[in-house]
Image 1 (spheres, rainbow, N blue to C red):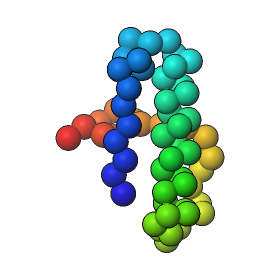
Image 2: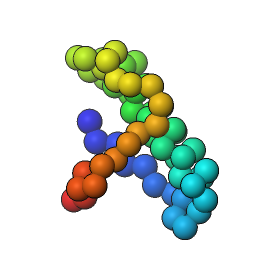
Image 3: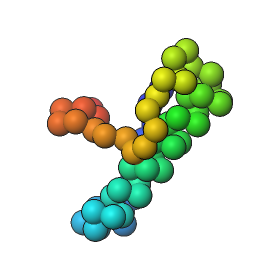
Length: 59
């Protein structure tokens, strides 16, 4: 599953704004994987925000 989330307000915004965007992204990814697409293993997804490590997410 590929979920692209972005907001111009998050760019250059406060760390609180970015944190809220990460929380929203995590919630959306879990909801889609667990309730919409019924992905195998989706129940094992961690709660909380999404954490992107250096090198991930670049295309």
